[in-house]
Image 1 (cartoon, one colour):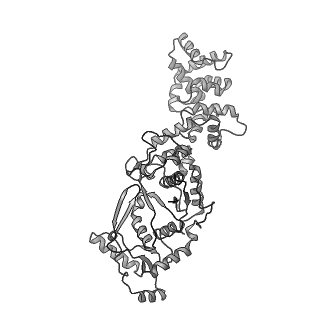
Image 2 (image 1 turned 180 degrees about the vertical axis):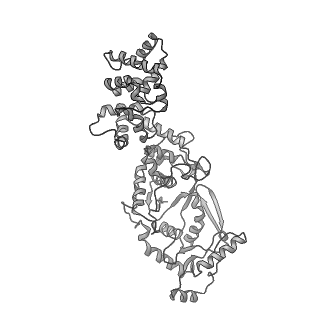
Image 3 (image 1 turned 30 degrees about the vertical axis):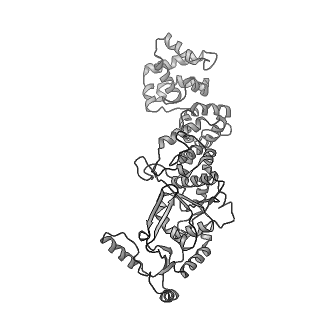
Length: 481
């Protein structure tokens, strides 16, 4: 079988985590099987579509490292790849199915449908179309349509049919046709609905496998029956588990950021997010947690997708981010964090690159996102510091301030700054004055950075340089008030 898979986003908003994982799994399946990954844009919602949303989706996919073989910006033999440009094809398919009796016109008003639904709810029955127009004579249907009476086209779901779906993830799934109502395939204005477009496009584009979230499983019997009405074999379906928050509920904005752009804009390494999405419902083996696109493309297998919900563990994502940041070459990491430092107004074209790499090296073990760096290193770029609450409390102690002035004088007399073996120097200094080492280094860090965290004090001294470091250690208490 020639593998052809598709990801079909709607340009009505940004690319969310669930959609990104679906795209990734389709991409990996295509690459694993030397197949074709198609990007198809479902843009029939004319009121909500936007060019901005489309640009955002394409940009997010590229940022994540996903490339497509057919679709926008690529073209292909089975285009156009925008549903809004395929209306003639939908109309032709609808006409064929109407003529063969697989679709029928429904003239029911919204008022009647609302009344039927209300009665069903009162009787504790599942709401569904009652088939009122299903037996309407062809001549009567044609006459009313010719007279301009508004109608929709419904799919005539065959009665007494078992819809068997051999799902590649969930195993054998069965629906009775009685569970599927006669659904609207084409709206009264002529606009086809999602399920109708989906089948027509999947058939025309020779889609071999449909890999998507399990929330779409309810649509599958409708699509399978429509494939059969068209006389076509349906693709292989694979419904992947939902992404859940730690509370066990479907991922939402209450649980964390849901749009891929949010992670990009906060400075998450794209490789880490790619890796993390791979782990949401899939495992490479029973032990490997860190792997990239090459390994995913080489080993992806639908059989390794779990059926249970995938937990979106932000702590694990942050751990992965830290791993990728620590293993990024320093020069490349500096280039990646540069936009965040520039936006914070900390660096410009005149900033010494070698010094900047030292700044980045000092924090690479501590940051999980590129966007964290500006706040952590701002003290290196500021002329005056405003200590945070914890550092301010340390510096409020008169004894600590006296020690800072004394250690500044001692450091000023050293030929090298900081002394080559600063650890030994501070131990000797503290022992000679009978000062606990912590009582010396903690105030120094507070005075130099305005916080109680950061790199080792020796690194901070080296980054600030002799003049700026000594000035901070000697700074009067009044200026810190």
